[in-house]
Image 1 (cartoon, one colour):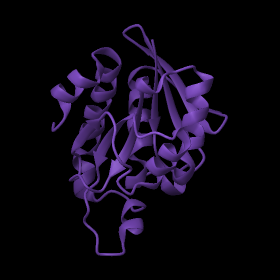
Image 2 (cartoon, helix red, strand yellow):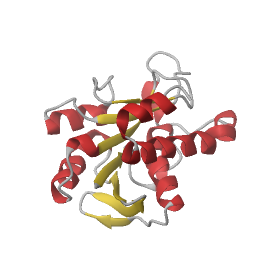
Image 3 (tube, helix red, strand yellow):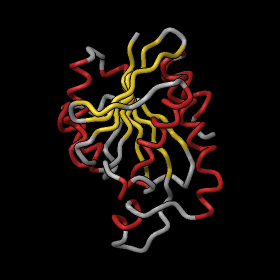
Image 4 (cartoon, rainbow, N blue to C red):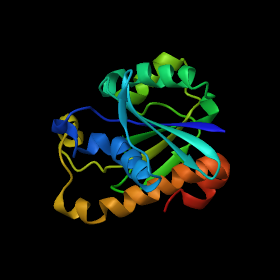
Length: 187
């Protein structure tokens, strides 16, 4: 079985430690844990790892957040992976910092990366793992907030929360979305 895990973020060192790049951070942690290395390929950095007999294709699009759909569509087709076997890992302003929630489908919630994926796939029927980044910003400061770096307080538990996010992904590939949501949502 093959699975596609897409972490949303923006390429380049300028964005590396920003809240918007949490999708990249989660996939980097999973690749490191499972002995994978990212290489630059068409429209993305890609790592292929194995976990309990499953092949996991980890994709960090290099197309910038607002054009993430291009990489998602390419790797779904290139790797011949069903949409049902894909998870998109994204930041979410509607969830408190570190809160994790997996959903099997849903709206883009105003997230430009998800908007582009939904437009490209012409569907909202795909799994996403939402990583809460909180909403501690003044009106009109949303862009600065998501493109801002983690606070010192957030950094204290960030790696722990990232590790829990990798458990969601491993669960999705082994026990499926329903049991993963039951076991991990709200943790």
